Image (cartoon, rainbow, N blue to C red; front, side, top):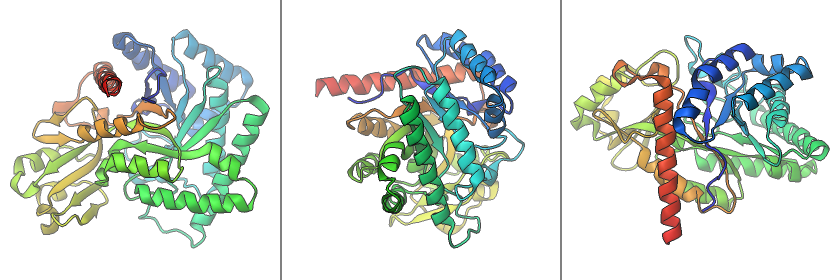
Length: 395
């Protein structure tokens, strides 16, 4: 098995973090208590918004103090979430989370500030990773040279990361995260994009930098929502030599035979909420894929005929990863099990991070004390990893 032996990470985008003070408050209020209940060392997968990395970058003392406070809490950090640029806990996030996109200098400079910050937080002898957005959102209008601009910015980031490695010995890897209805949505789209990215990098004699520092974040929820065979997706990335730098341990909502399952559709309507985007995808009996940009009460309770007659729906709503079922709704936890088993067959160990950021917007009947909920997720994940390891040893 090549599953990571590092302390499990959970992503702190689950609580607000618009300032350094707010990040520290979340770590004190939630993370240290989760670690105590979990009973094992825990890594904080820090979400550092642009405002936070700018604040940390104001002086060496500020960043050093933050690093010391992490150590005093008994926490390590080897991965960052550099996807949400701004306030991930505002009243309405939705499609705004995809701005600024990778065609802009704002995204490049923010991401490199995250790289520099992680290089200072990273424990000795560990590699770092940071997840990032999948170029842009398909529903937005883009200039004809959009992808070319994204490629140039990503190559420039890889060049800077390669230089940082030469100067400090620190290896940091970017993990681009495919997501439903984004420009990198499916595994195949990601593979094809990396082919074009590498071709351009080779023209600039920067292929080594790109290959070493740029890869993907495999968010299991996202690829499950796409109705991909997650094990085959991971094998395809391996075959194409696209490195999985990070795995988001996540689950989506699922309904089988929605026409016959009005109870489940009524339950799904309770998950409609105004903050995050919940792309909803249906698979028909003929394997056709139907897409809706966001979950709505109309879609859940009075869907169009093609959605209603579909074989299955899956919804981009990160739900607790220890749950097989939530009332009459199913989750994609079976896919999570298959994905982690496939990751265990790789000849390297991607970083593993639990990323359920939706606790605050779950329906009333599903909400719980955040510390208890996060602890159950981590314990469930540890049990799953132990089962996979034991099964591998018996094989």
